[in-house]
Length: 560
Image (tube, rainbow, N blue to C red; front, side):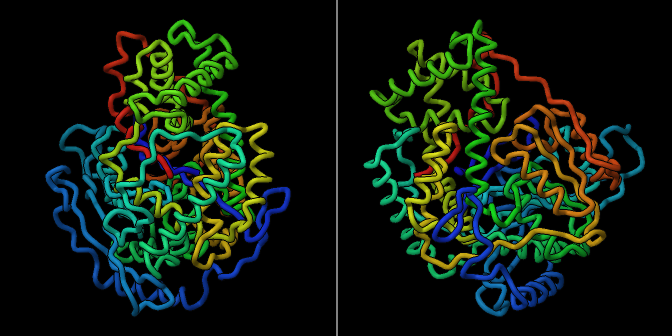
């Protein structure tokens, strides 16, 4: 699955990342065998983590001005924490992870000036997902109204995981050659097209090995969980308070399994299914099917607002309008950069957050009327961000390829996804091409850890999920809730936006506040009604509405 990063209207950073597979072949169910050539972790790695955490506790983090201090508020400070590249060899090669922080304000935003200070509750560490998501800007949510109560009680801590940004960055191709636009992603590719993409996947995998070196095998979800333990110690925290979104829920769950006694509170926002038989190939198939349903939700919404967009009064008519645009872009790319592949990518991004629906519908309608500018602004590759996008894609690929066995025979991929594309064509093959380098990965793979905690071993944790989330389908939240004893699941019913924490749903936010600020959870899992549907943009407001959303969409990675 292509990773996407967006700031929601409320300011929550949401990333996705899913994909996967077994070695040599996949049963008809799409589930991977519980085996692989490289164990998920052992005593040596555990000892190395203990050693690294003890050293980090003594050293701490020397926070100071951030490297880009001129672009960040003075309240945010940055530092680094040293971790072993290979936890089985804690005295060997070390890498530096960058960390950011905004200290707890101690001020209750609901109280008048002079009110008693809010007690500090420690550090809240956040991961936005990916793999490949950079959380360095997370502490800036302290400036947003929705976060001010949490920012009063907690130091807000973000960081760039290993491989990301300045944290021992990975690369698989020259960033200057990363974006390929215009491009096409056929929903039913020909045999010749498949051969072309297989060749590209092989070349990409070779490039990852060549540009990243022998340390490539140590960029894994388990290593991310171990790094989190070292970061906890470096921050001086006896127990960890953590919030992970999307992929962040997966390695957060690994942390909970490995270090349950070191958990204080954990929030799993939009949960990946941690079933080791699905990591990652079965998850990928489930995701493609879920995006088809989300695509249908979007088309039905556009049809209900035909008076605004004129794209058709039924979901089928809206689909016909989209196909008309695809055909036109194949013949003549918009702005010379937006072909059918970029169109599909933009509308896939709209599947993450229904706040993007008005913008996407408006761009499609304008294009079919002869104005290509909104579509170019929405879908053209953001070339100024090519280096960041290439780095994110490299980390995504490395972590997910390393995490689990994958099929090494393209005929397995072809069989499973040809079958799936008959009913879910929108994203199925795009998912395949994003993940196919894992079929030809040049380093050993792990066996996924069986995420599971015994009753009483882990403090109560909170799982948040939208019922129609496509990026992390709802079944993943149910499975994580089942595996983490004592967890509570809060579901936004009938909604599909990916990432719920401190978004527009007050019901969800009330549960989140009660947990983070008071440690309170409902006695059993709870439901929240869906947020209101987005309002369509009227022509008079189209140029001024949601400028920050358009900028966010422009920065998405157009995967090779």
